[in-house]
Image 1 (tube, rainbow, N blue to C red):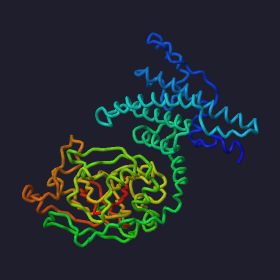
Image 2: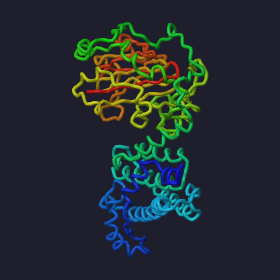
Image 3: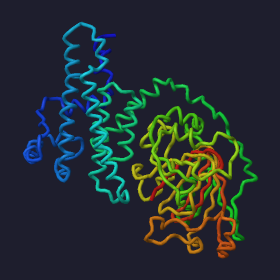
Image 4: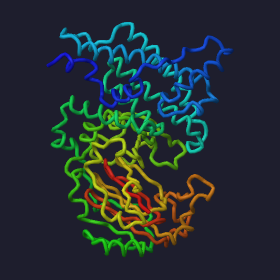
Length: 479
């Protein structure tokens, strides 16, 4: 191995190295922090040349927060100095000498101290930005705060890499920036995360993960499973074995729900995925988790944690469903764009060809969501505005469908509510027919969705979904 091959510079993730070289490839004098508020305006005038170096944010966007702007400028100056010393000078030295630079893999104590102080300042800025992100409804938060959060995450990642921090520390910061921010700088955080994730998996020697089996496969007696409160107006769902595109188009035109069989047999996920495989491939990734049995519960909340933490805390270890399980003990990775964050899993699934029958064949406009959780997760009765193909990869769910004609009986929340597409009724409550006698003849059908099968749900069809065992589903929404 040559000196260059063993250098720290050669071990920096290429995406981080490229970002830093593009930013600091040529030496640029960055302004020092002003000593008083009186020098603030003068300092701001001097940082105009730095604006292009703020990752994904223009100077004008931060004019209302000049101290944040100046703080980032100072951090950029520190990052530039450390990068040139630890990487650029190291590369030049290795190219001009035959001496072994074994200590190149260890940052100097002085640089470590400088980096740690920078990371502390970044933590203060991140905490402040986090507070701004959590004021009011997420959609009403000004974009600058999401962009700023990602900008800070990018800086954190760069400092962590130069500090020689572990890959796990680096990827956690990447994930937080991806979750809470915006895809600025050509989505560089996702590129870094992909590269670092690949390194982690390789280091863990997970190449044989495909042979992993579920340690305690759930045993469900499907013949004895049923939802409560069946009405007198139940109908059977249409079952279609790998229908042609023409046949499926007729289902779409007539808005007929269909249980699809033999349509995803070619998916690698069907043979590879189980709880432990997900842990091995993605356990170190940070994701949002819904806590509570259903999103209409008063105590429902969301938390951010690693997938391994989620599995340890919420996935049932027993093989039997526990109906008495406390709602707070139920966690769910629900309606989440997991595959955008984890291309390692995305390559194991395919977009169903039926999605091309929608108003657009552009795969980028097809919304793909993951639904991963233990037994007894519930999606309350609701409808979606788009076509939906729900695929069950492993585990099973039971689903009750109501046609749009039953909307008034299901008593949706008001149009002004965030839950306007959700029923106010709990269709499994003990006294449902007594409290709501009109539900006695509500038209519906019940479907058992088992591994390898898919369910087509037309737009505005109401559906109630309950998992029977640890399961993983993928939904494809298209117009």
